[in-house]
Image 1 (cartoon, one colour):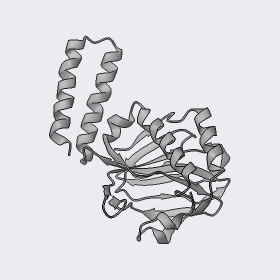
Image 2 (cartoon, one colour):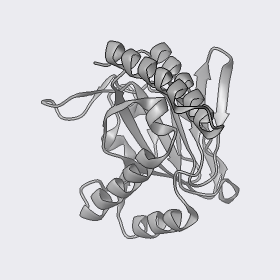
Image 3 (cartoon, one colour):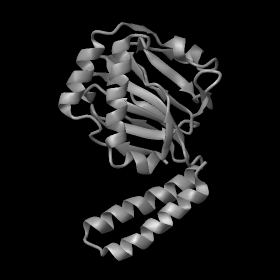
Length: 223
């Protein structure tokens, strides 16, 4: 399941992130690419060893976790560190699929989902769409600053070449408590419906039975 999360970062948050990134050195993005993707990756990434980058990662992840649909869509168990990427004219990330396991050798994380949080206004650069291959063909995603997309990490995807301006984004990967996409989608539909019923004033006793079903499905499927 692919889902768009609108308004993960407010305008003042975006300004803060951009401002702090301007004080961090950017290095060759190939240094964080897996063996299969290294040959098609052409971008820059904020130096993750800078303490300012660590603090900025925490700020962005906290905002992501506060988004009302993130928990429902991802059922996150663990997240990788974030990568802040920058694409300047001529830069691209060719077709690839993400590594199934990421992280240090003694603490590997299974990448069930990936996400991209856009940090630059779409009008400020040309090209740079995230293109995801799906059963319906290629989907081109270019969101406004502060919006994010969560999508299957195992899909074939690429970042189209930037032709002018600069594309700035935060990317990361999620290990879900519910590895199977179909089961996550069932839980997502039930949880969203539950919230809409609550907003419509449905009696708590009726919602309680739905809560019971969601919780019991999560108990069966979580690992």
